[in-house]
Image: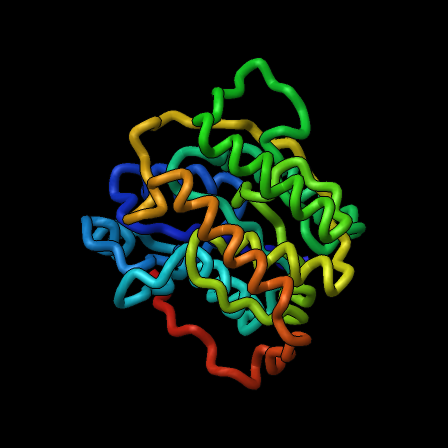
Length: 250
């Protein structure tokens, strides 16, 4: 199976080249989605050869970066997309774990979980993030009859054909709310995989009002409720019937 590794980035100049080097120890099929970076990230990506780069002219959101990665993978004939973040919260060294799980061929979504198994090397999650994750994971498990332990981990493997059965359009950080609702509606097979819990930079924050935990929880609940009440899903066109996201091959 052809597997693409996709990394959404926004103003990640301090880490982007290091993460790319680490990922390329395990694969040469690498896409970076630059979500309108205003720091030195675009320049560094232009200097990095052997990768595909999809550039948003302005910041469109984390969810939109994932949606575009799924479309890109479909257009390029990939069977799976593994997504990981560029903020040092995901270890590229765990990519082989995802590749092995993909070869088992018993799931459509293989979702990293920072709470599935205890690891003495794990960092403590910021209290507000862990509590919001716990609350919303519990709500979705109850409402959608899922069995998740971590609904917000971005380290995931996605079967491309399964993603093409969804109608995803939530562009921001609340993307997981819509994603899990649609996965449940489509009866996708979901498997969790333990990953390290890493919080090396406690100063990282959410943009705007989302940095307030109460406002962030309210926003996530609003998106979840909209997703639950959404009309029956309208299928996307087959990937090659729609324009492929423009990219450059560096």
